[in-house]
Length: 354
Image 1 (cartoon, helix red, strand yellow):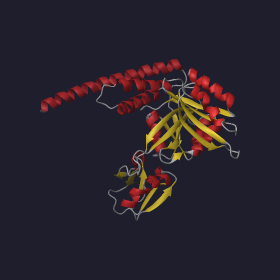
Image 2 (cartoon, rainbow, N blue to C red):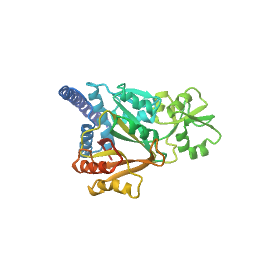
Image 3 (tube, rainbow, N blue to C red):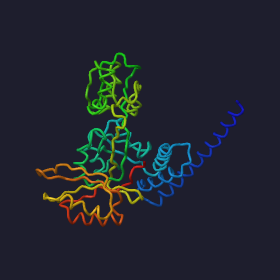
Image 4 (cartoon, helix red, strand yellow):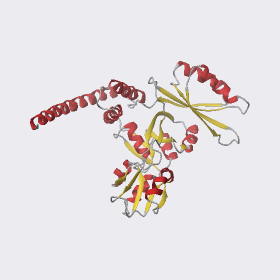
């Protein structure tokens, strides 16, 4: 048995050596491509195409999500040889926003945690960051209204999206649940875990904080406290995951937008986000959207919000399938423009895999 195990380990060592050689060869080719580009290194559409192809060609036993994770990190490390991207996100360190940034860009990036969503927008607008990753909606809590309000008036474009499953964990310095006098967490996270807390820690004080990461920081200073946060906060602040996945809704997911001063080129499987308004008249909204249906453009999201500075007038946020440069999408948008009081293309970008 030991001879068989040794032979298998020798094969693994040989494969690891070949992987190392190939990874460095890939990095050299990526550097050559970067020199030819002589400009923007990160291309959302190109990375999306590569990941789709690799997942489609994957013979197993590795899962497609594992392939995506591995190659995102490979591309991140190769990209960093040419351009060290700075990513702004809603901080501090250890938040789900940082986890979303890592999921999209990999770990070979510079972190710029921001105290507010407004600051994340400004960081890109002023050139302090190359991209921002901001939450826009949650499957249980709904829309992040501040993100929508800011993007309408901003020059930034959506160039990507991230879907992040939100798993809330009970974190503390020690082990077990005994002796926990208080639980820190963002108000939304406390609400998302209230049934579990009622059952398992009914007498613990629940303390709302500005972010789950801040709660984790406070819990790290007090052995009698715990925090509700993600695994990245546990790693950042040196806490133990006492009980994993205590959220009441197991399918809780947050969608994040990736923002920059440009949108992405067509990747073959894209989404376009729009903001529009219609005249306050009977049938105006139906008339506004009719060109999309006539062109066979599928609408995947429709949401209304009160327009700023005007009573009883609304902005409509619409997601459609396709890229703004696709012929039928471009044709439909020209017709919508002729009917709308306002039409702003917020960005075209690759749809998330899955």
